Length: 163
Length: 284
Ligand SMILES: Cc1cc2nc3c(=O)[nH]c(=O)nc-3n(C[C@H](O)[C@H](O)[C@H](O)COP(=O)(O)OP(=O)(O)OC[C@H]3O[C@@H](n4cnc5c(N)ncnc54)[C@H](O)[C@@H]3O)c2cc1C
Ligand code: FES
Ligand code: FES
Image (tube, rainbow over all chains, first blue to last red; front, side, top):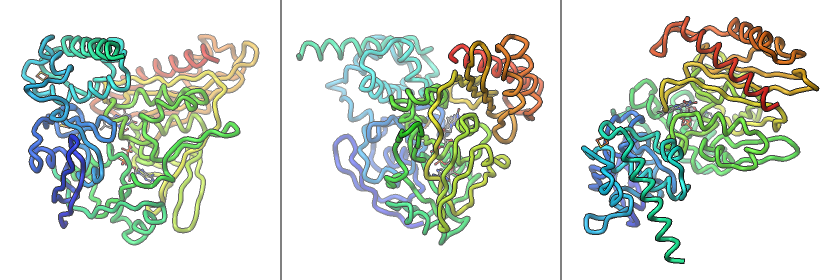
């Protein structure tokens, strides 16, 4: 089928790509836009490694066609922080050993970011339920949960200090 | 996993979607959240030469509650169902069930319309809609019709919906009853080994009305009138619940699959049904 131009805003930047409608968003992000943060784990909607944020929703980008994202506002892990200026969540994962191989981490942090926007004061149970769509083969989740809870506390403290 | 090529349509109103459906017949299919259809297309178990994305159709979105009647647009996501406070007040069983579907990411995308139109026996909403005696509103080129959820399902993936019709809304009465949606699954993100929706009302210390429906225990959702009848007029005591469970188990026909052999599913179903009844009664 013919390719078409798909326009979307990725991490605040307007992007235009030529893609067939059947191309999955994750591959368009990775291979056409060079956003290799979101990973492909299972490719079957189960692991969450490909999680990105689309119009305020955490989405498994292996289960969305690029064409569906026409006009959408997308955030990937690249848009959260940079090596020189880590996001609080990234800093917290580093501090609390929230990753081992790191494969699940971009999806995990992107999801956690959305979770904390919707629920800035989560309980441990809220965090576990909220990241249930992200699988980690390494950590046993304990330190991931710790990292997210600690980031939440830090973000709240910063918010309070600013007021 | 790359699906076969297709032409992508994104109409902005229902008429636009219907005209693509009419033009391409069974070569065309609508796309809602895509979290059942896209996996099937990736596996090439669904071939859809013309894909009609419904996301821009405003008329298919939103929840309204008026005069005790709840109307939900087909494109309303599970995430939206969960977070809608007025819906929770009018029909709390919807949130209880929706929270047991898949995982957060899937719930942001998966829609109630896609869930009930899909026809997969594993979907949770169809059984719940039968329990609530919901009506599905379908629109085609010949007009609009209403089909009760209880008459909609024919066999796995076969429903009363015509290929050229779109499900636009779901309606049901707000709930003034004890409720429960119980589901046993192997892990988060798995479909039910057994699930049960129950509504029970009380008159004095007796069961006045009951509605019991089950998910993934036959090739269609199953409403068990016999189970309800076994409860009505009783005090919902152990013997009554046992009789209701026995009646419900008579109405289902599970098959062996990777979730277990038939005997195991019957066992799990029995436990889930009795828990659903007990919890609904405790809230009646
Ligand atoms: C990992 C994972 C786990 C899941 N676990 C569960 C679970 O436990 N329980 C559960 O219930 N579901 C589960 N699902 C399915 C999920 O809830 C789906 O999103 C839902 O079944 C279908 O909704 P959708 O909006 O994604 O529909 P789509 O996938 O877009 O469509 C599904 C079908 O319905 C048709 N359709 C959609 N909308 C309409 C309409 N308005 N009119 C006519 N036809 C229409 C489509 O043509 C298609 O045939 C899971 C999915 C995944 C990926
Ligand atoms: S790669 Fe998308 S969910 Fe696993
Ligand atoms: S750190 Fe290895 S998969 Fe999570």
